[in-house]
Length: 233
Image (cartoon, rainbow, N blue to C red):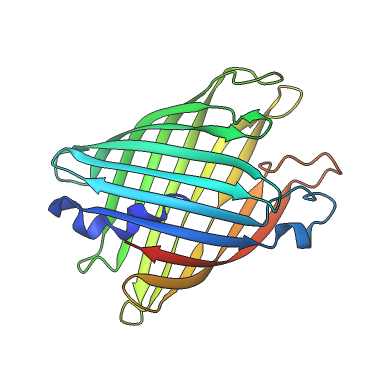
């Protein structure tokens, strides 16, 4: 549920935009994979904010995963971009991490370059980011290691802005339980029907490989859809 607001607001970067939204997602993943994802949360609340200024932009999101008994965890990504001229290039720095009921998520810092673009009326927006990624030893059974991440983000408004198709993909080098490297893929395309300028209903589909921790069998690829509502402030 991350990175989507960034693309939706590129049209107003030059104006010093400041915008925020809250999303509530009901996740069907545990219904589809009752064995592999028996502990997956049903509800996720996402808070996103984007703020542009004369140097570039700030962006963050927080995903709070809820169950009927407790808060499962809160994961955040915070990024800052510094514009390099007016050609769409920017320097990108980022922090990823958070807490869960068992301790914490493994933290990471990223630094690299981004290229951001759009069509004439900003109905189509895109971003590509290539970054060095450093994982830190955050808890037992984790280790510090170096990685590289490729990120793509897109946004498309159509039907007189009543519909929005947006999303991202991340591709990076991770490490499995025995310390060997593996390629990790995560994408979360979203479709929204914008009932008003503030309220939308829609869905998100999480596509991943080597991302979900699965001790039941050798399955690595998962498709986890949601139903969602969003309020734009």
